[in-house]
Length: 141
Image: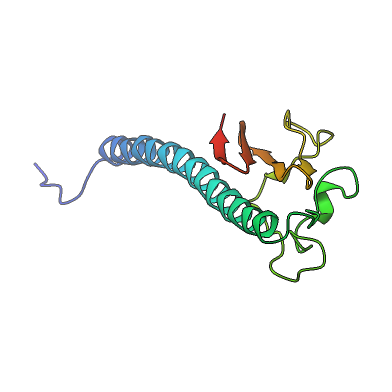
């Protein structure tokens, strides 16, 4: 009788199959974590935009916010949040997210601004969620 010093082909295939199953479970959970991270990033970005917009409206109530019908969401990134102030620009949203103007896909929110009343609504959508920010705060649905 010969003594074998290695593994059989069946044993190796079983180990490879187990490793494949475990790696697919890990990749599935990482995908979910990436989506949650994009949502959290978008929430933080919109919260920062909301804070800047509030400070602009409070500092100069007649300051127009760059939202609504005069611009399309694709041009928001990099444009000024408050017209003519040079304070801050709209930051880029995570991949798959867009600022809302009512015409953008997946956006139920229409971003508006009423500078005489000191009110505004800024929205963004992506990853199956919509974030709506007003002068009083942000909500995610």
